[in-house]
Image 1 (cartoon, one colour):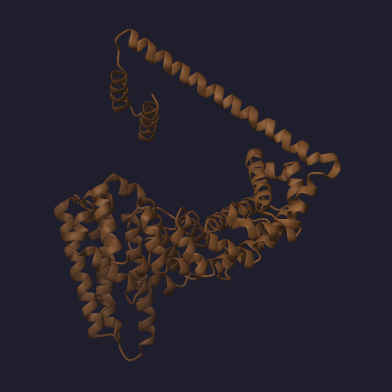
Image 2 (spheres, helix red, strand yellow):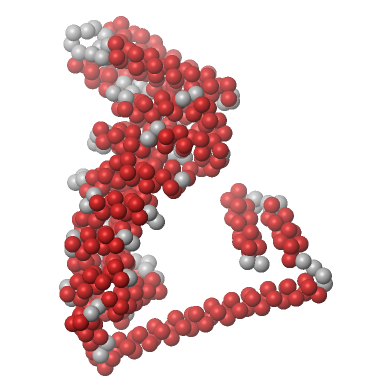
Length: 513
């Protein structure tokens, strides 16, 4: 029997959250892959004795797994599991140092180590016991394994961390989650994850899955604690994301995920926006978006990636320094061409122009926009919302808002000849653009008046309730107390989610009562 075949065997460890485009269980990572390759290259040693040992061990794996599944998960069993993990990790490290060129001497410890890492997935079902991982130093040991010589071990650790940091699991025990996240951040988890991703080969499915799960860890932590985005970006994540996004490889799930993480990092964070600008990230975003100038995204996933990149660009333009980089990188010309080409990217290009030209910081961009004949592009959109934009799902109101904002920015920022060219547009064709402007004015004035009436109606009802309470000697405090008690005892209906949403709705109403 071929030793590679033996080493590639893994017992079924159960299911976990899958990538959208995967049908296979990601936990079928082959820890013996690297060892098998090394054994095949090692001609001077007969590994037949090792083969027998490994065969005996692997044949017992399923039986051992069945026995462990019957054990209850409690504090004692988790402590025992962590202790076993520490012992196997130390033993593997010791033998690797002692016999670095003889994989047959440490391959069994590698299999043992992988097995205990897989068994530790059960801890993700008990987030209130996460403190044991920190107290017994298991988090530090797991982070150390992210740089393990065998990438399969590192990927197994990533897989485990992804389950431990699953956002739903973290919310089950806020206290346990805080302890775990604090420990991971103290151990520079993002820097270690980035270093591990840099050595992974995404041509190999298992390693591509490892990259995907790494990004999932970062997303989970960022959602649970948004403040870590700055620290994560500075630990090499921003640089790696930009490098991965501009890599000349076919579109895949990992590239989509990278665009999503990038948009998350830049959201409401001037530090990460500045860092992206310093790393020439504006040029990277413009280069990637230029593909959609004359071509629509091929799939819904690719369209989502395009929108993520546009959102990232809009976030960056909130910083004045990035508007200069956008101008120098000919971003205005690209957005103007997108508007003229009438592809799917046109809607988002309009939004980018709005972000780049608004306020005093957008003055240079406004002047350049006129110079590149942008007025010829924007005023037809001002006169009428194109049908294709409506089909793409863009609401008329959103389109009109961006177009009017761009023209308003130009009116505020333009000077001299460029301002004259803008004003002359309103006199063309018997002042048709003035007519359109007044049409929009009365359209939104009516909407505001309707909203005001609705608000007044709500205030009238509220006043009536208070009036009756005063007449009958009642109290608003009593009503609020009754409603809070009602919210606390509300049934869950069809699901727990319904109960939570209904409780939130009632509490929001109470705040305005």
